[in-house]
Amino acid sequence: MRDKQQLKLSKNQALVYEALSQSSKPIGAYDLLDQLKAHGLKAPLQIYRALDSLIELKVVHRLESLNAWTICCDADHDAAPIFVICDDCGDVKEHIDKRLNRSIENISKKSGFTAERPIVEIHGRCEDCGPKTN
Image (cartoon, rainbow, N blue to C red; front, top):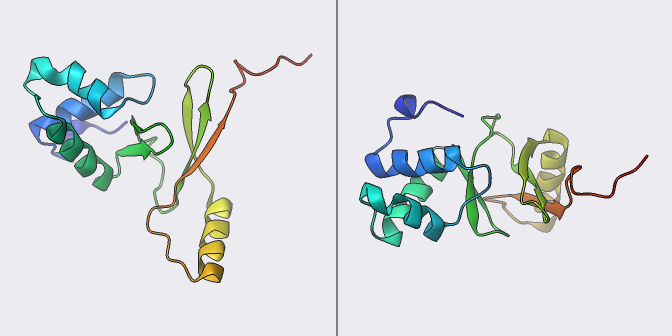
C-alpha cells in the first residue's frame, strides 16, 4: 500500500483510499458512501469521482464482476492485473503474469482489437474454502 501523503490526494480521494486500505474485502461505492458520510461525503458522485481518480493513479482497481473496488497490490502495472476471487469468503488476491498478458496482447492483435483496459477475474474457491485434500 502506498503512502497517501506521497500521492498528494484530495480530501475525498484520501478518505476513499483510507477506507479501501482498511477493508479486508473489496467495497462497493454505496458502501463507501455509507462509511464516509460522517466525514462529509454526501453524494455518490463524490465517491465515483474519487474512485476514478484513484484508478488513474493506479492505486485502486475496479472488480467488474463484483462492482466493487480494492486497493492495488503495488505491483508493476505495465501488465494487466489478474484477480482470483473466492466466491465463498470473498477473499481477493491480485497477481501479475506477464506471460498471460502477452497472450492477451496476441489475442487482441489477431482480432484486430485494441485492448484499453484488460482485466482478468477468476472466480472459484480459495485454499481455505475449497475441498480439503489429504
